[in-house]
Length: 426
Ligand code: NAP
Ligand code: HSE
Image (cartoon, rainbow, N blue to C red; front, side, top):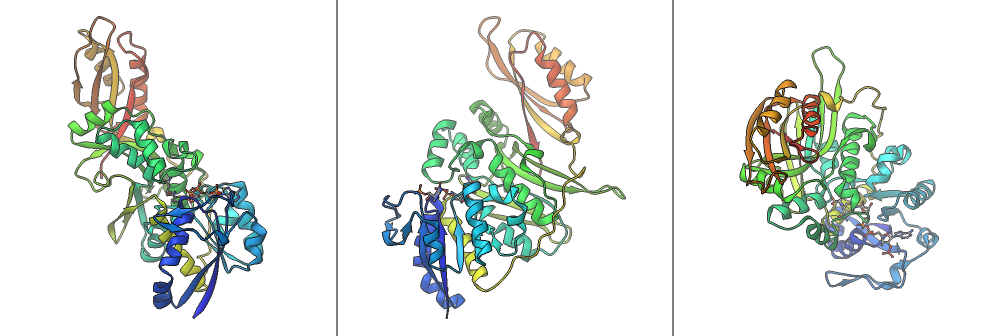
């Protein structure tokens, strides 16, 4: 039986569950994998804090506040679960220099550090999709030409949007997501779409080799979504979901291009993605020969995420190396967002008086945006009181919609900036 010493850096939401599950699964892993995984030391910031998870107390003697003490125990594998950039980078590089295998879930660091991302001794399945083996599936089980991956890659925002559909306020839902351990230490990373953009950029690099930075892709968060949008969507057979997508597009002899984005969309309530609720994540993988695969599961939370980490520890313990990654810069390969076609949902706050719709329809018409349906909810009280009107467009070029909305926003009957979301069609 091969004995493997595991050092762990970080004992927060994920680290605590990892330790508990390594204890609980030790015998099963011995039996199935012929590996004896032993946790030898755990680095924390606060060595005095008592740590219990689901009734399991983390043995105090495992904890240390000294990185050197972890390394002095000669671990075979070091798992990094601190989640910082500079501290984590320094520790990971030290481990690699000393010949250790490293397992990490630190998507932030992986998107900005090429050396760590391409290192054959760094394993990071848990960095995308929590407990869902997305990276492992794409790398090992789908030797096809992948054309698209679209999914829900952030559990916190999905939990918030699902809770809003059930009538809960945004701020309360965020509070709960934090309490459940889904959110990042800095929750604006979730809300702004940054976390999901890091994950889709990692997938882009893994599948296509294109090394794009999260700040260079289309990214919109969920903070502008109001209860009124969720209610409209529900009434008209849609859910609002924050999706991450990467599509490879090639027109006959033309060079291939990529559409990479994270944004909230309206999506039919019957679709697989709309049925993905709470902290769940899901992805549809489209391949030329395999057709469509759909993976769904717990995308955030320490318990499921720790299982992906254990899968990486097992793989690393067997002496495996990751595939050598080749990456190239995006140089002109990203599709300009303005050139993307979609159906749109638009909410405009207007003065409730005759002739308003005609003015709005005119600005849409002049910019070649065809309207599928319009709805006004309620009546404004008094001349200057606003009412929202909701518009669904036919498929149109995003730049045309933006021009139409710019004209609308200058109309004397329009109060505030119009708000729009794309409508995703599976
Ligand atoms: P967390 O709850 O904030 O835990 C961070 C841990 O790191 C804490 O135990 C903290 O110690 C320790 N730490 C922080 N700074 C340190 C330092 N300078 N020196 C030593 N220890 C330090 O974070 P988390 O939610 O577990 O996330 C960890 C990583 O997993 C992140 O990269 C995150 O993106 C990723 N991830 C998280 C989830 C999830 O559902 N939460 C899912 C997938 C991936 P103290 O406890 O003493 O403060
Ligand atoms: N904060 C992340 C999320 C954790 O909500 O999806 C999992 O990566």
